[in-house]
Image (cartoon, rainbow, N blue to C red; front, side):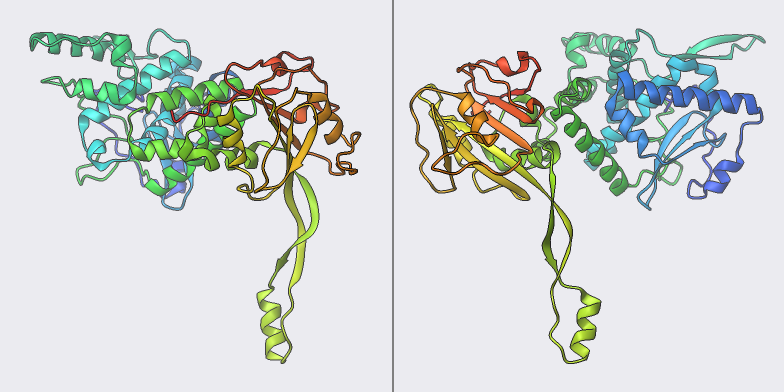
Length: 484
């Protein structure tokens, strides 16, 4: 952290030891074992709070820091991303004890957010601009204050020059920076933004700071952003490692959000909103991850991407034995050397998903939804899909067939067919569905399947979302099919 991780801007930066040598880090121990233990306890308590109530992003990201090293080699705390693809959390136990439990949560949240920032905003032009460094500090600390429910930055005791101590804030105060921004713009005869508008997105902060004649760039920045005399970073931040760790973290967050975890959903949407206008790369990244599905939106250019990811990450699966044929290279080489033809062999159990997609084709269903869902037929991979259209009756179909309908609507007929009680064209459904996806406007008598947890209802615009109010409730999502 900085001055954001807690170093006073008046204190010379202590050189960071060779971070590739973990033995050197471990050798820089805090002298007092009680302080070391208390620092470790505060760190563990903060990480537990993240997982339970504060931040799924931070919890999952720090879970990827397999080595969490107490060391006096850093003044505060830092996440290190090395070229071997691993991450380390370095923390000074004495610093953690000095700022207390709330301060530790603040610092660790800040560290996690720095990795997210570094991945989202990778443009060299931005990263080389000290004003962007300041904007990152402001944006990150603004989010930390909100998410942790704090009104002030953490503080620690520092000498006051007369033999006593005083409490000094740890980090860049976003409200103080906003105050200086307002004064600067008013002196120029310009109209500044309110604090709420100033902090609406990370790039808004950067753009507004660039309007200042003298942005208040502190002389000592975060250890992730500062450089040594030779221009290299003081803490290793390998770009490929950062990218891999952050993308895995965001993908896990998306999986949890799509499974209905409200904390994950709220944090992911907030993060996406704060990166608005970050360019085509970020737009494509969020599209690949399935942000439109989480928001109940489906962009035409992103249909297949979010649909595939949703099926792959969310739906349950079953095992089907021995379906993959593989060519054993070593055995094949031996057989060829002996003059025999090589043989293919079967390998283990393959995980496949059995999914029933039931499309409401009654007269009340919007035609654009019918066209949208049928365009997806046959485009999913690794899924054993069974497609139904239904109104008052059930009508299985396969890709390329015309979907008929137009009468009344009966959800019970779909339930009876999927659960093997209702024959259609003389045949019963013999599979055990891992998931049943109902695409409907919701207007029909309610039903209670045998396994409500396996039913997912996609409700069209203006439809009745009764499944989420049902007892027991079922997964229920709004679907928007326009371009935006």
